[in-house]
Amino acid sequence: MEHTDIAIVGAGLAGSLCAGMLGKKGVSHVLIDPREAYPDEFRCEKFNHQQIELLEETGLAKNVLSDLMPVKDVWMARFGRLVRKQHYPHYGFSYHQAVNAVRRHHVNQDNFKLGSVQSITCSGQEHIIETSDGTEISAKLVVLATGANAALQKQLGMSQEMLSERHCLAIGFDLEPETDFEFDTMTYWPESASGKMSYLTFFRTNTGWRANLFGYWNLKDPQIANLKSDPFRCLVSLMPNLEKITGRFSVTGKLRVRPINLYQWNANQVDGVVALGDAWSSSCPGAGTGTTKAMNDALLISKTFIPRWLEHGPMNADTLSEFYNAPRKLEIDTESIDEAYKLRHITLSKSLYWQAQRWARFLYHGMRGKLASG
Image (cartoon, rainbow, N blue to C red):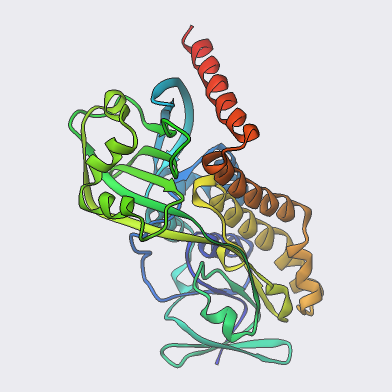
């Protein structure tokens, strides 16, 4: 039996950040994941200014950001017209690059356990984790950072509330321009309000160009089949003026299509187990709030709550609810859900209110673009 204070299950962004911060504080912990390095997976792929500030607050930013691609020249197109160019410093990357940067610089290999968790059982004030190789780990607190994988939540008897099933589709792909783009990032909003497309974004990473397309198709929609068979032609049919702004480009590699459900677990039903990021509640990738939620959860739990709980114990469900009800967490979680529904309404709703919202955004960004260029 191995013993530790904190067992973190899942070494994605939230879990790896949590381990890095606990390591800096000298807290006894183990980070458990079935992969030595995080694989190339379609997830969040930008850090905006708010997320950079959160990363800096963790104390882990400097080395991590040095491994990612800084970008600054941002273009925005609406209704088929380029309405804005600006300098907006942020970072572009593939998700696995960011996670592996955190692991490389801030996760001590002595605290890393390679394997998958088969079960978690309660034994008095401690929890026993059994891994795939038969190892048993005793921990005072288990931190679930397993993303959308629900196996352990179900095994622990947690219940899930489905907020919006099949809420949207997130589609990601690599691309290669015939002539390098003049921008570092471009967001292209739909040319009309009659379709199901939310927006398309191109961004530069340190390994090439990436694109994410967000919309409200279902997986059987002919548009998805068209995207898979001839992605460039389908994109141009969705956005006839796209090529005029970007120039010609080719889609390379595999098209990745991910349906998104909005859900929330009732994770505070279990003693000694706390859930972070998507293991607690999901977000809409198009709204861009998932990374903020994951970072904020990791920051709060590692810098504020775990040190307090270790000092004062015991870690029952009532005590752990302090984390779920923390004002800063509630604010960011609520904003994430609100932004998910707002993006859906502004894309699909034909009401006068949301039509006015679309035109207000067009005029706002057009005016800001003119002021910046003039």
